[in-house]
Image (cartoon, rainbow, N blue to C red; front, top):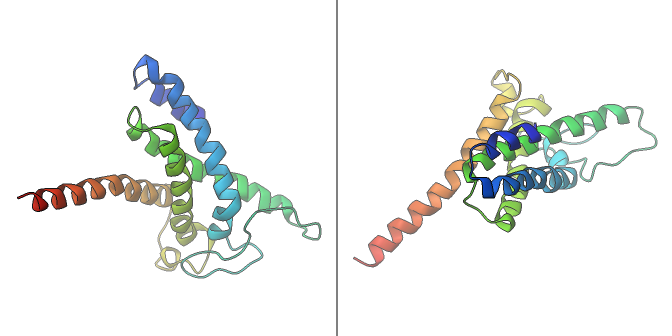
Length: 172
C-alpha cells in the first residue's frame, strides 16, 4: 500500500518533490513500524496479556516466545496491524505534501502511529473495547483509520486558530 500511495502522491506534486514523497513513504514504514513494534502493538492488542476498554497493557517490544504455541498468530497479527498503522500515516501525508520538512514528518509519523493504536483497540482487538461493546461494525478497518486520520488532520488547524485568535486579541 505504501508504494501505491507514494505513486499517487508523486503524481500530485511538482517534479522536484517526487523523490521527497517516496522518501516520506519509506519513513512511514521505518519509523511507524519501529514505533508500532515498541509500543503500538502493546497498546493495541490483548493477546496473552492484559487490556481494558481504553487500551492494551502488554506485548510491548514484540518478540518470539520460545514456549508459546501461537507465535505465528502473534507475528501475522503484528505485521497486519503494522500495515494498517503505517497506512493511516501515509494517507495523511498526501495533505502534507510539499509543506513539511523531513524531520517534522518523522515526528508526525511516530505520533500518528501512537495515536492509531487507541481507536484500533476500541474497535478490533478487544471484546472489552467500548466501540465493540456498543455494537459498532467495522468494514475493512475504516473506523479506526478514519478516526485517526480525521483527528490528526484537525490538529494543525486547531493550532493555527489558537495562534491566530491570541495574536489578534493581543495586538488589538
